[in-house]
Length: 71
Image (tube, rainbow, N blue to C red; front, side):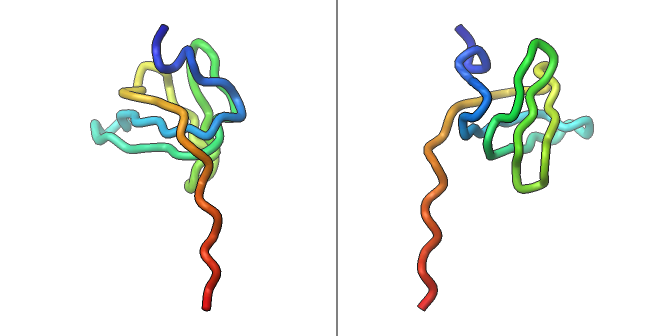
């Protein structure tokens, strides 16, 4: 079973993938959809559609920490 097969919509994930420029980048956030062609992550840059063939690594991550109170 590959790392992508373990992921399900709703999980908070980090996905490292290759951009068309050849650079690697990460998408961090809830996994919206996943199918045999692509993944969609709701990250800081909005919805990121990632072709499965561009994925280098992917895993579930813990929930984001609670905001710290300002004082």
